[in-house]
Image (cartoon, rainbow, N blue to C red; front, side):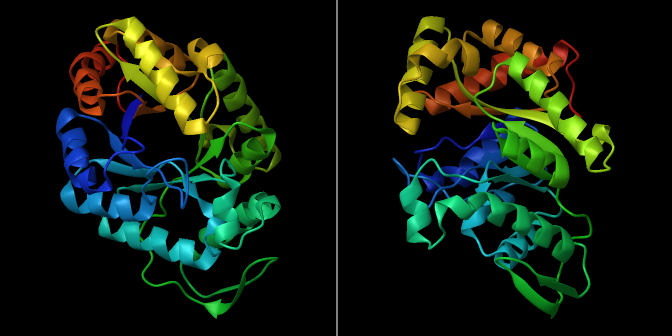
Length: 307
């Protein structure tokens, strides 16, 4: 199992280089940034944040979790992906989502909310073609390219992860992605969704085993398990502007280090080859340090090794 650290939403983006260095030194396999144009609080931009992280680190992988792809012109997104993959020397992985949690940001960038799924599907096709190198001609619903070549392109195309929870996202992952990255899912639902995505991939003529499983986990780890639960429920409820009290035990990762290790083992057994630890608590620094010192070593000792 690979374990990634999410840069805490709401934290000062100026701290990204320092947090990325901490993640690398602590043994995390990759570092993540998310994004919104507008949201309920401060948010990063994934491409900018990960470029800063790339310059501050040497080995750790980098993943956008998630890039809201329909808000970008497809050719511009391809250029940003190629540039970040190049400057990071092949460490970048593209996580893609359709967004929609905050409609005003779509209005602000001139993208109708109802088009976000179609725009994402088309953009993924454009990305694949442009990143393959050579001249591309493409005439789609939203994108027109006449014999243009993206330069430079990375030697190896960055892996693509599709995030979400709904059937449309599963179909998108099955058709376009290297990995399926759901969020707010129990281990049981993760196992079911991974199986569904792989079955759909076979229908598109792709080997099912080509689809890797992952999961994004809003998390809080504390020596006081009850406090961890209270804090993650409060933080996630504020993020999504809805009460998560009734969903915490199914969808959120929280508790003492021992309980968090056990829960991660359940996700690993359900098909999670990659897990994103997304701190959602009052003291991000303490949670990151506790996870790094008391959860990560236990994961390695159990034989849930890096891949």
